[in-house]
Picture (tube, rainbow, N blue to C red):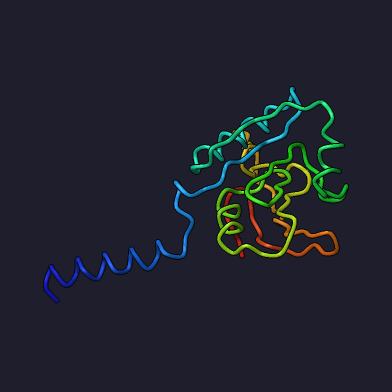
Length: 156
């Protein structure tokens, strides 16, 4: 194989991979609803910005009503709620899973990381261990595992 063939092969592979992914310029805007006093919500929004999302943060003192309006049940609740495209994100959902959701477009309300697992995006604390947790795909009638994580590392 000569260098020209190698470069053409790399270019073709890059085009193939890019065709199935959501490019950073194509990511929809994200709105994050958070309590005015929650720092981890701010950290999660910043992680989403770093991943290429255009994030708008909306301060709300009535987070329970936001969750209810967007279809987030009590068992899925966390500290912040976001919308991106037609989906709802509850809690510390890893950026990679948000991009995957937007690529796959499942019939669902959205993704949730219930509670506030240590080590999840926005919940990193130096010296603290990472929790194992599930990213849950949820709809009005069904919840199912979408991905498993330990901290910010996918484990499935």
